Length: 390
Image (cartoon, rainbow, N blue to C red):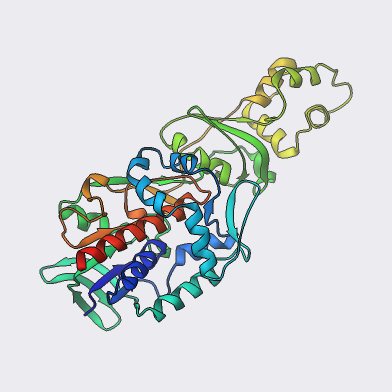
């Protein structure tokens, strides 16, 4: 029987397993899926964003009210350490113009493959298709290809993720089992998700098109970015950056001309439209592309003129009909409250059991913050569990 058990083979769980193996424990990783790191692989399809190269103070601020809890962990294993960790796994990294850090190969699969090989070399055993089913009097119950199994390790790390992308393994089923054991659970909410917009028919020709070089304003937050018009609504990095404010009820406005003061926009529109169509007039005078013009017409039709038209381009309201479902969110808010864990991320009501990653109640925008905190909390919990086992 292994001295240490990790449930969940995502970044947090793998980092915890490595820390415990380095401490001399016999470690097994139980994973419900046939392969490890499925959500990480999905994230890597569009370029694996490892972390963000920025001052630590700015980096920490991205975690909001969870910052005091995560600061000690991120101070020990933050953006600089994540870069070094990836390079130790044979993945050279580079920093993009936005400060986001990526492996040169962009994909997650080479890093994940090298990491699993290193873990196996350190003696970590992988138990695939082992699905945790909760607690029994004798320990932790698993449904396995060989039938039901009950394990009672010296220490256990729970790293089961939140409740988004359940088909990749994070279904949040654990929340009910832990709540029954007296663990305080904050209800799940979607984070970094798209929002439904009930488009009129004239937007159909723009589905799938990006809206670039805009500022999104919600709840006092202004973010430069871009997003995509989908059949269902809006999604993409710019939307995710303000998704928390929108989820909590803030309205969304777009500045379609983030580099042009409103007075200058008014001056440009002071010239006569002449024989130009309204679309050509806006394209020539404000350099707006068709998708931005379509958004203006969606907001107000017929379009105003003069200063009112300039004001609309600088503060275009977008009517939202709610967030995309929790299962489709990139990440989740909610989970195990920090009041329910001690300084080593040990669960107070379950001695010998620790939690890491998205199971904990924190959220952050995309941009490398999510993966860095998963790795950092996994490392922290793994070290604490190793001390407890000794």
